[in-house]
Image (tube, rainbow, N blue to C red; front, side, top):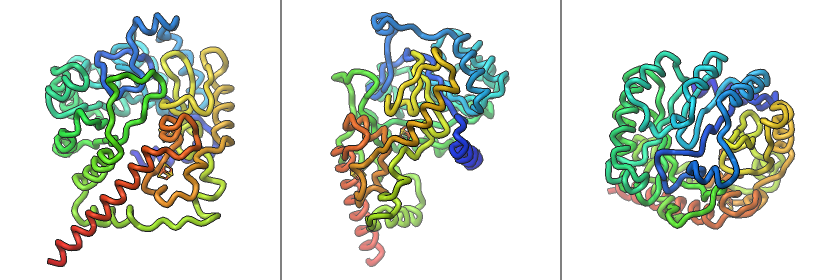
Length: 372
Ligand code: SF4
Ligand code: SF4
């Protein structure tokens, strides 16, 4: 399915079609996680003089997206199951023929919700698993019982035949649970998408409780994840490919014209609409343009956005970097790290350097072990 959708997204990008979109229905959540990029309380929303959009407003917008060619729609938050009239909205979107995915912490998905979802099959439910124990959930989310509820939701959805993916965001508070999370996914035969790098928040104020690894720790988590997930031979091959010298010359893939613009789906074949009605290319950052599809036609917004994404140069600070293949910087990473789309990001540079050093050492150790 992923391969098939990759193909569709590539075609859509070529034809400037907004094939995939995200509706971020609400910034409100029943958790208060330290690494969240959007969370707000209802009181904060009111204090900003804003409001959550009505479900009928989202339906009207969805009709325009549908006309423009959108097929994949992600419903996210905050916690989307807390959005008032979530079910009414979901059913309406389902009837319109969208392939719906849901990003959720899973804690509000009980047996009745699973039965309901079975009736209106989603394309996928992505459940974020914050740790492997009650203690970790208490530390990160402020809710010990959240752990059992999330695990029960994952198991229940899987048993009901609903496609589930486990998302995991690693920070110092759940570092000790890395293997437990990966093993849980393995045991259930579910894909675990584990982020070992955390963006600094760009859509909310930084808070004292914000938490992320040092570059060295993040690099170690990255390498450890790869080691855990791969068979030893694949791991060695992977290490060798990662540490291979990257030759940088004028006119190669990084110096050429093509790499000077955003290359992911954001703004080329997908869009993000936040809870307050702001449309961007990527949900992590306001760059390169913010539009307001509840105030002007969606198709006009999309045309402006995709034009700007295709013509705004980015990542000039990373040109000629010998660790670019390993670092894989995207504009959102550079933007949230530096506040610009084109400067080198010291955190990322240090992380890439550390990862490379660790991988070289790993290879040395493996070579020595083989020689003995
Ligand atoms: S996070 Fe980076 S790769 Fe992902 S959509 Fe945003 S800009 Fe693209
Ligand atoms: S952030 Fe640093 S390591 Fe990463 S590609 Fe840019 S210059 Fe290279």
